Structure formats: structure tokens, C-alpha cells
Length: 354
Image (cartoon, rainbow, N blue to C red):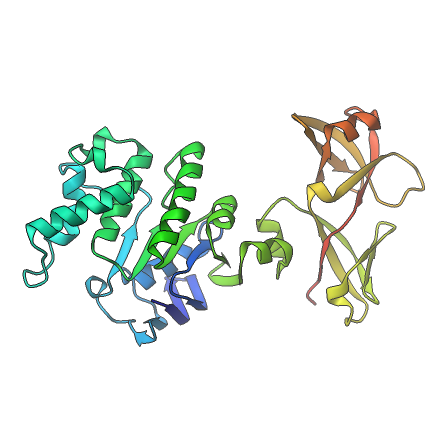
């Protein structure tokens, strides 16, 4: 089933949580809503679920108006960050809950409930824990049970709000790979909220990156990494240094350097900012006439086969970071306190707004 939101807006007092948001999600897609805290991603998810109402705009499931349909009639499965399992119920009864509370005319037989719950527990690979209580489970196990419970009512849409946020890094990594495999098997429209870039890029078919109540960019993980639409997208998806300069005839110039800026080739001469990743910065020993950014090496972080250099710009325009292979760093023969020159090998360049 496809999901479409059109021109959704939502305010909480003077705070604008959503600002004219439109989005289309195809049936079978796993879409990640990514962005900083307060950007509107959870509000958007809750409006799609029917747990909150928008001030304006529309929600459609398979092209049918759903904006004012009660949450209980939307057939949405919802998984929260903190599991929300019933402590006094066994794992089996937690998963069966949604089936048991259906109206009498729609309620499955006891035999069907047992069969359904057993198959779901096998699906999440926890059938051996059916008689345990939530307090006897690990965090990762609880979240998988919460997911099984959401799937028990055969939702048309699966919505997950920071589903792995309460788990440690190792368990998060294991569960997100498991979720990806499970989704490929179930193939229903799924949306999950996260503020973790790595999580969104690893799991999602498409990523919706939000900022201040608006969508900055929608695309595949590769598109967001390789073709960021705005400086915010580039900066949010990893550390970046910002270098000021000018673009003329498709070339960015600044700090004695020239870099291609093909996307601005049709522009007149404009000021523009080059955004550079740490692994795209070359370091050379200090030379008075060298093109580049004069820096001082303030700290060296040894990371096995690579090093992260913390650099202070001598124009006081802020710090820089550079990743180098350990072998390259040792060949430089420099130490903390040395003067160096930093040069970007490539950059994403955005014209500055007037």
C-alpha cells in the first residue's frame, strides 16, 4: 500500500513542527525519516499513524483520503523506542493482545490466535521465549517482540519511531540488519524515524532528510551521499569544513586553490562555499608560497591504519580535520605544533544565497 502526504503543516503554539510537507512512499518501500532533534520527523510519523492531527494538509493510503480516519481503522502497526510491552503479560500474550481486543465480529478464534502468534514469534526468531515476561528479556529481544506485536494485526503500514534508540551500539547494528531482512520478506510500506545517519543510510531504500519542519532532500542513500542538494544535507551526513571563495566560469577559487564547480557553470560570478570531507583534505609541510590553507597541527588521533589530524586554521576561521593513512602521516615527519598547509582534493560547492 502506498502512502502520500500532501502539504502537511503542524504548529505547537509558536513552534512550527511541520511546514508544508509533501511526500510519497511506494508500497513495499522502507523509508527512513532522518534529521536532528526537533526537525518534525516524529510529528510526521504520528500524523501518518493517526495519533496526531495536522493543522492543514492531507494523508492518503492507496490514494484514499485518510486524514480524518480514526487510528484504529487505519491498520497501522506502530513500534515505539521504549518497547511499550505489557509487563504483566507473557511474550505470547503481548503479541496476541491486538488480536484479542478486536471487536467480537472480527476477532479470530483461539486456535487461529495461537497459530498466528507462534508464526510471528518464529518470524522474529524468539518462539522459544513465548512463556517469558518482558523483564526477563534483553533490550534487543523486547524490541523484536514489540515488532511482532505490531505485525500481529496485519498492518497495511508499519511505522517505527526510533526503534533502536534505547539499545547499545552493537545490538543496534545487529537489529537494523535484521529489520532490513525482515522487511524484504514482508514487503509492506514501512517508515522509521532515526537521528542516526549510519542507521538510515544502511537500512533505507530511500531517506527523507528533514530540517526545521521541512524536507531538505529525498533520495537513495547513494544520492544523498554523492549528490547532496543543500549545504545542510552535506554537513549533516558527515563532518565537513567550509571554505569561502568565488565561482566564475564553472571554477571555484579561494585560498590560492581552484576546484571544479560544474553545477554552478551557468552562474555569473558569485560567492560560494566549498564543503570538504576530512578524507578529501591533503596535508603538506609548511611552505610560504604554497596554495592552500595555513594550519597548525594541534592534535593527532591514532586510529589503527589511519590518523585523524585536528588542525587550527591560522586565519582563525575555525578548526579543520583531516584523515590520512598512517603510512602517509609518518612519511610527513611532523608532530603536534607544526605548521602545515591543508589542500582539498575535491569538494561540494554551493552558491551563497544573496
